Length: 70
Image (cartoon, rainbow, N blue to C red; front, side, top):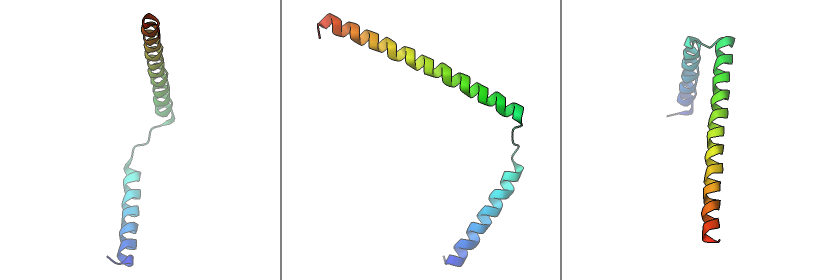
């Protein structure tokens, strides 16, 4: 494949990509705001669950270490 063919293929790819991007239905500001809020809330909730699991496992390990005298 020559350099000219690669350049033509790249141009074709870029043109097709642009055409496909024009077909996309982009979210409006209300949908975007709503989706951002949902992501933020779930991020906080998952972080809280992970923090609770971390503190619980720390407590259990500390308790076991205290029993064994380590």
